Amino acid sequence: MPRPWNLLARLLPARYRDAVRGFTTNARRYLATVALQNAGYGVIGTVFAIELKNRGFAESVVGDVEGALALAAAVVCLTLPPLVSSLGYRRLMIAAGLALGLARLGQAYAPSAVLVVALGLLYGLGDGAMQALSTAFLSENAGRSGRTQLFTADFVLRTASMVVGSLVGGIAPVLLRPMVGEADAYRLTIVLAAVMMAGSTVFAAGIEERHHGQGRLFAGWLASLKGFTSWGRVVRLLVPEMFISFGAGLVIPFVALFLKHRLGATVTEVGVIQAVSSVAMAAAALFTPKLARRFGLAGTVVITELASLPFLISIPFAASLPIAATLFWLRGMLMNMSWPVYNQLSMEGLPTQDKPLVAGWVRFGWSIAWLGGSALGGRLMAGSYTTPYFYTAALYATGAIATFLLLRKIKPAEEAA
Image (tube, rainbow, N blue to C red):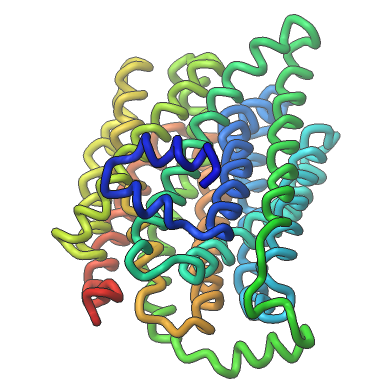
């Protein structure tokens, strides 16, 4: 096993070590791909909204960029999964990495809000492709006994990479500012994120196809649709997913602006706060398999999401940056720690050929709801940086309850067997 994987195994709790050593080559290359991409996401999450605001763009532009990428991601999530059988995972992931990198590179130098938003469409193509492919790819490249560990490792590695990216996003502008000035310091930091994302294609290129990558494109697309039998699962997944996504869209794209312009945080402090939040989520996610064994897949999701709500509602009342940061950390940890379990829940018991399309429909619903939430959130934030948090709490609570009502009967494959 390559030396980095030995190191990763030593850092993880004992129950994960054998599972990590047993990950397939494809799973490892996929994890390396998303690690680089999520490092780029971390940088963008720290500096992008601040950079747009510094260039004179309104909060609504930030929301519209998120809406544009969500719109493109929705289209990709719906149309791309049936093409896996024709194009294969490898080529689609390479194209996604290039789209992510080129879009952020263009946005760093775009002279108008219209062009910034338009490039958000290109970014959404790449983001939507990774959303639609990731869950199905992991499910296909994991043994039954290590499936929960692989989904959890995926989440932990993504989150850890975002920690690195958030720290880079907070430190790089400070280091670059004396040499190139403030405006170019932010711009070059975004360029660095673009390089990370495009660089992920090096690892994606090493993924080995199994039974994909053959056949005529349109014929394969039609065949996947005609043979699809999991519409009931799609509906049950979409309802809670869209409530959660709409609520997240109201506030998540604007966290950096809330910290900087309401509480006076510096860009470095924003980066550190984002990074610590990611660390908390990654650490908490390691315990989700144990929670899943105790409370079930759906029960784990519901319990952790509901537990996050008191901290979310308290954020608008925070009188200082340290208090707000602590609330963000606790909220983020509890709300997001169960995502590996939810991803597993969405795939359990499905026929292999249905998995890409189910994942695509779910991500389609997420993207459409994010489009509405971020577009509305940008306009709400222009009037108040605090009010949207209360709407988000109500939507999260509704989504958690819907998860319990609609998905509680789904069992892990080994338990069902």
